[in-house]
Image (cartoon, rainbow, N blue to C red; front, top):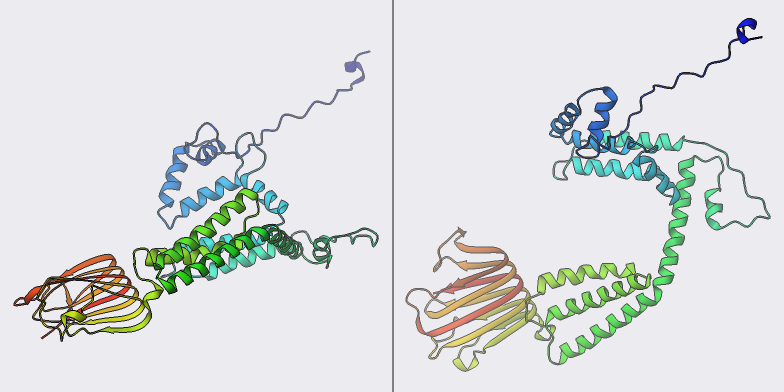
Amino acid sequence: MTTTDTGWIPPQAPPPSTRRLLRRSRTDRVGAGVAGGLGQYFGLDPVLFRVLFAVSAFFGGAGVLAYVIAWAAIPEQGAVNAPVDRIIAELRRRRVPIWLVAAAGSIALWVLAFSWWAPGPFFPVMIVVILLVVVFGHRGRVSRARPEPSAPTVSLEKDALADPNAPEWVSSTRAWIVEAKQASRERRRRAFPVRIGVLVTLVATLTVLGIADAVTGIRLPLYFWLTGGIVGVGLLIGLVLRRTPWSMLPLLVPAVVGTIAFGNTHASLHDGIGQSGWTPTAAGQLKSHYALAFGRGTLDLTSSAPASVPRNIDIAMGAGQVRILLPSTLNATVVANVRIGEIDVDGSNVTGLYQDGIHRVHGFDIQHTVVPPAGATGAPVMITVHLADGNISVDHQS
């Protein structure tokens, strides 16, 4: 007897699914394959999508943002998960709250899209943040079973399960904070020997420098050079030993700033701090070198007679103001050097831009030479000023 005689027909297998999947192309691609994948999915030329992304990029960067979102959300051909899935899985593995990352990304997007000097409306960003918090807050209000009394639990689990009816984002945030604190304590414990070694070396070095500076004088940049060097070596040793004292990293900020600001000065704390007035009235009282660490130094030569022999005078200061008062009859040339600041010269003997009758030069690493006025007499006097940060003022008085 055949199946035809009984009238029974065996079931047929269902036809294969023809559902199309949106995937980024691996073959037709210029960047991440987004346009190629869209072209294959919709049966259109990928060039149309590339032109669309390129044109919309000029409208506030919308095309760039859309392309990045498409890259993150669309899997590549042959893959199941999109990049955003892998990112979320990694965040969950590290116990980092997803809503916190989404909120930070929204704020960062606002910062990049609108400059600080002309900020755009913050209201749309706030809506995005609130929606993200609500979505992740109501996502999975699952009840968690409390651990049995006999089972030992760590503080992380106790904190995370303190309220079993709390939203998932609350529990994940609490767990992330507790785990971050535990990891921070462990890092500090491991880095403690290196940190103590760096601090002891730094304090001992600065103490020796201070004593030497009080006795003979030490250039100001040496403090910042050695501070940066000691902290940098300590961080490198910590990296090699996997015990990096990251808490020492802020010390590099004053070291770098101080090196930039005082890198070329010859002044020292031994030279003094405050106001100093140098007023020589005779040739024998005129020194070849004047220095001041911080403050205001004034070289007043208005009472000095014209020099009988050539003289060279050097003035060094770390930060502050250097004033040079010269008689209009003195044959004195001033070479002013400022690392960061400005140079003011009266308008009697220079040409250039003036403001309120004063020739002003300002900027970074500037040098200006003030030549003697017409009719000056006597032997030439060369005054060279080196100021790290501040103002140099040259005034000719009749």
